[in-house]
Image 1: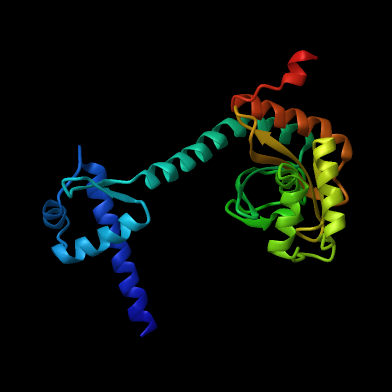
Image 2: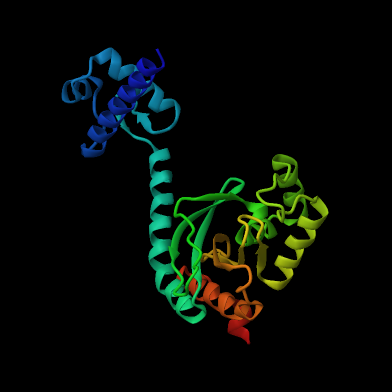
Length: 259
């Protein structure tokens, strides 16, 4: 029964995809009759699936009763494009930083209460740290996550603590609300944060925030290394790399310009 249910779910997804593909190929709104004919779906089946797509904003219906792609897909597409542009702009900055410190450099974005690794350049030294692209971790156990939290202010951090309960990943993970609050406040003040084997035993990180043209934090840049090799004197180079990437995204650092 479970296998039949899974097969049916996959079939529905395939049918949704065929309808979306047909709408994407059209020059304008398309009637139910034409969608049914061109996808090979029975009109009642196509109508039922389109209603679901309407509910979630992937499809819109005109006054004439025809269908077209919805704004929600545009929003998702913009997010994908932002990630593509971010990775393209980040790579030369990341490679330059990696060449300077010899360790793995990571690019992350925030999704909800987690960071997601979207790009990485591997270190050049033996026993290098390899983080998986697409991997996730809670904000409070990563250096860049603490930078994201620093943008939330004290109230936002307290809300995060209440939502997550500060579940530990390792014996070094921060589980004390007071300790996390102090670390986040230090990150906001100093412009960088640390992860002291809080996500993975034996691995430590330094992280900074990356801003776009509006000044909003859109990503995090970090150096990961075996804990006994991480050096605090890399902070300046990391902050400079974060600023270079921010400027490539349109950020104007008034302090730097005025100085």
